Image 1 (tube, rainbow, N blue to C red):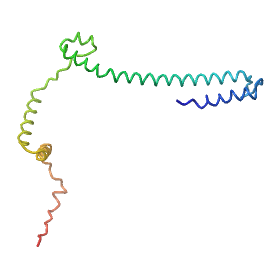
Image 2: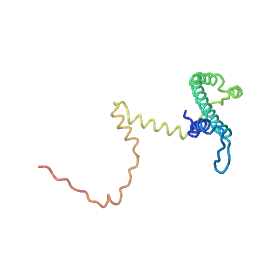
Image 3: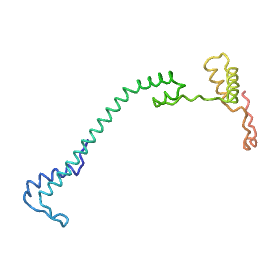
Image 4: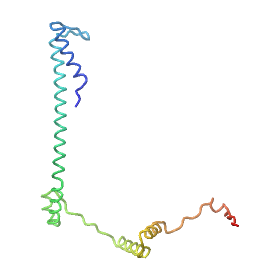
Length: 167
């Protein structure tokens, strides 16, 4: 952690003031300051910067400790959650004691089920018993839109160019 630049500078000021202006009074910005008052003010600035640095170091240490504990406790907590959900999935009161909610059951509509069955049948028919390369090509063909796009006006206007015959 770095010390605030002003705090580092005032430490130098303190030693310089005590060495060269020990019993003087200095006028700064149209105000008189006895050297002892300046030293006290600068020492307070330095002390507060040191306290801030210490607090930051303590915070960083505490955050690292909390992250280490979370990494250690996380898998155990996940395992406990699985056990509790498996044991009490239908009992919302007991789950609430563990701050858990019952798992939500998704209800599929008959339209979604029938669409999935049609898609599965089409995929099985297209893929059949083929190798991986043939399956990839068949999946690409299935992913392509089933209705061909209408040709654009530019494509309709351009005549087909005959290819020259090879001799």
